[in-house]
Image (cartoon, rainbow, N blue to C red; front, top):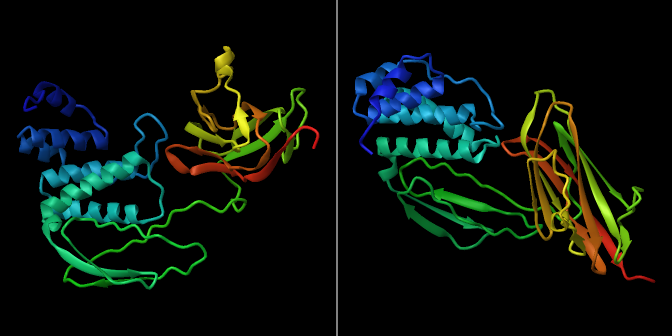
Length: 327
């Protein structure tokens, strides 16, 4: 707003600041027109130790490097900025999972640096053909061009790219999809997950075939089996087959969610959110009703740390049947 709080900034400057705070303060001084103060703060090391925070600020080393790049771009310090641009580019192009915050900070910082270097203003041309289709010609000046390509099941996908200009272009092919029903793979990475279905007396039930009108309890047991301490922000996605209904006990004034942070109960799924200390186990129960006769697919159950995709577990789905009484 053109009204920097210089008094507070100066007091903060005298403290022993962590790396990220120091670089953000340097950017604030630059934006306030005090370039000498900004440069004195920006004389330090640009190295950031690797880390991934699951809660609080949801930070990571890549996010912090992106903040440093923003400051170096403001100061037009191209030599040091270029080093970080390369690191961020490699991280964004890798198979490394990133939170939305880390990805956003990295893209914003690189985009601003591209504007400083003039790269965003250069034009380029290329052509491509997909699945032996007609050649498509693209001319653009935006830093990124994205095309959606429809793939056919069980087909051999072939793409032909040709750079028709003088600029160096970097191509990425990103594939996303859903596994075929029944082909999912179970997983356990830092988390273990077990599922059992019980009747009203607490006895195990075979869900492959249920009589219409049967009530059952799905009991999911989740354990922090890792060795890195507490997991924050765990999300459990429990989807149910189309032939079952979820009993929302909140509607009857009953709910036992004392061990949970939040639970989102919908028509066909329940999302449950909670934290897990190292070695801790939590049990989440869901009351279900076999409502409609027919054959349905029970989707896989997924659980993961919301801000670190390496921490996850998955249970396979299966086909189930709901029969009419007397069949």
